[in-house]
Amino acid sequence: MTAPARARNPLAFLEAEIEELKAKGIFRRLRVVQSEQKSRCVIDGKEVITLSSNNYLGLNTHPKLMAAAAEAVRDYGAGSGAVRTIAGTMTLHEQLEARLADFKHVEATLTFQSGFTCNTGVIPILAPEGAVIVSDALNHASIIDGIRLTKAERRIFPHADMDGLRTALREVRDADADRTILVLTDGVFSMDGDIAKLPEIVDAAEEADAIVYVDDAHGSGVLGRNGRGTVDHFGLHGRVQVQVGTLSKAIGVLGGYVAGSRSLRTVLEHKARPFLFSTSAPPAVAAACIAAVDVLETEPELIDRLWDNARFFKDGLARLGFNIGHSETPITPVIAGEGALAMKLSDRLFEEGVFAQGIGFPTVPEHLSRVRTIVTAGHTRDELETCLAAFETVGRELALI
Ligand SMILES: *Cc1c(COP(=O)(O)O)cnc(C)c1O
Image (cartoon, rainbow, N blue to C red; front, side, top):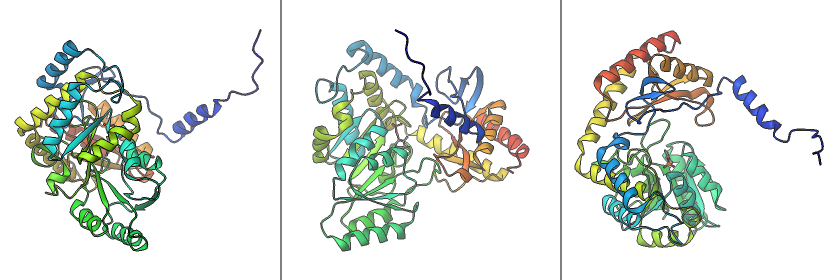
């Protein structure tokens, strides 16, 4: 039998989307890293200095992590074989969770396959039907998707607007003394590099008996003593009920975790959907993460070097006259304007031997398109000076400075 001729390709809208991306100048191909992820890598066949990884401390290629991963493969194999709630909880997962709880000074932690699945798994548990979520407008996409999975009411306050937050909390609490209120914020905002005003958020939440939930993906390993994160940075232990961290950025591997009370962990073990329905991390991942916690505890000089490099690079960009927003962390945006200009900046930097990914809508507003830079502990002064020279050349060419 021959298939009947189709009148129409049902996937034709995909072609239209691609045409639209091209028309807007924001179509891009994925760049391929062909070497280790270090400050200098081979990307698309060219050796470049990268300012685009989240490898803040260089742990991706730290010998202790690599050895721990290799040993775990030898002892336990390549995969975990099941979801955590059936047969996929291995000793290494439990060890990692105990280490993280100790490190974060909390009762318990629970790991997930990624920071993304952690948010989508935890938020629906903390905001059941009838609850109210109060969330910063610039929170990460995975928080937004976590919110979308709830039936809770949503109140979005303008980014970092503490009056907006307090007003929302007061209105909700005055109307109902018993409703569960969940306040959600990034610890470090991933596109701008500013730090949440956590002391004020915690004060406001305590007044309204609200839960505070901090997603510290970019704060983990970067802020606080030995990289314990934003809560430690502000000395707010015991006043933030839920901290989410990622193991995929400064920790150098893959995964996410939530840190909080023992009862939080117990309920999540029974109810968090990514935990119940998606296979656990391979043993090598858990082992490398344990080694990463060892490194955070024993080599704090990596964090010092990260911050030295961040200060040097930020000062350099500011001195050249770039618009670098109001970052307070090693994330430094270089704001170009419209999307096409940011992509041009990124492309020209690449030709000059520097990789800084262009980022536009929908990740940031169209008129604030940018390249986002992240320096790491692994960058040498020479490398950072080479980067600044490339920014100067291209910045002048594109009339950004
Ligand atoms: C990167 C990021 C995540 C996702 O973490 P992964 O481990 O990469 O899935 C979640 N939240 C924030 C704020 C992030 O920046």
